Image 1: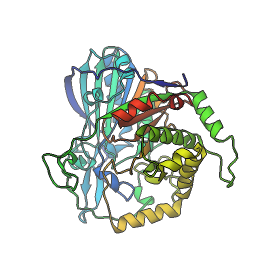
Image 2: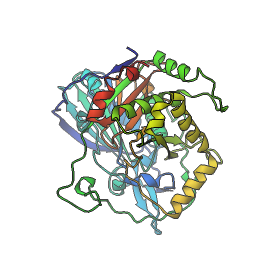
Image 3: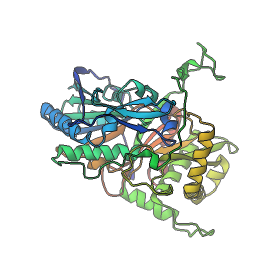
Image 4: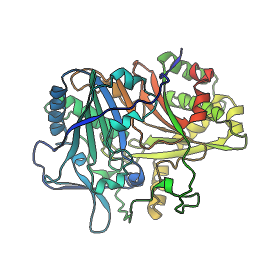
Length: 450
């Protein structure tokens, strides 16, 4: 089969025992440090903590924990912002504050010895992950009084689960995996971070934006017009599923969509564009929408090389922006895949330094804090990237057996792309959809076997 699906099974119930909670700080004293959050960071204050789960083989839990904490002390000397907290300066501008007297990174040690790694690998939903990753349902704004990074190290029946919750107002996916790979290097004996983070966010944008924010009400307690209402409709039942596209499937998608030379002289379609339109079209088909309905495609684009001047790959923070494009359902489905891929390609190519500047100026003139699910009507929204070498994060006991996202920041149409566990050009696609739509998608052979 070209695309492998996770097994269907009832959601597990985890018996979790918390062993202890500690805090980890940089190994050496750094003094007081402050770093202003910039326009690229601020919109994420109303998102939730970004959660990642990795699980590894191994039986020496105490030894593994000791090595992880020791490496964390070292890597935090460079990534000290993760050991700080959010704050505001005298003008009300958000910033990251670090001081040697702060608690640092929260590390919880726990045990779920009835859970095996094969259970986690086969799990489709994220309900079980709530027991293994901290900060469920915690908004980034709460970083004013919570750790910016919280970690849970859980002893499994046959291994170790590392659950991390990162404050998304402080860093994006690129910086997340830069930190994770640097932490792994430190655990493997590297005396220093090989690629230190570039910490001066103001080099990308130096506009000071004052925000007066408070925690929003629970969306589930609001009626459709925004008023509190006990009788508000419950949110739709969502399901998550991982679809694993092999290297040969990815190559076939890309070669097929590029078989016909575009008549408008546009560039060949990339792997990302070929896979994205494949997902967009088949999710739209499964939703059974009307031809006149609008469907939106959203992608969070790395702007490090798009801004002027370009920023280094090691830039630490958020340097992404959401790109929105869309079309009528009838047009997307009636035309061949090249039509949708062309829409995606044009939107990505158009998001150059000028477009980024205009977006920033518009936001700064009238700041709007989006909720994590504001991605558009009937949307497919793609986050993360198969470029991140998640299966190369080796802390000294081999590659991870699995990498997943937690339950935070999920909504109907959210897609996470990961480097495929099987290696090469394979890609794992983690999708969240309404339950009925997911049921149709997983039976769509043209989606599963492109």
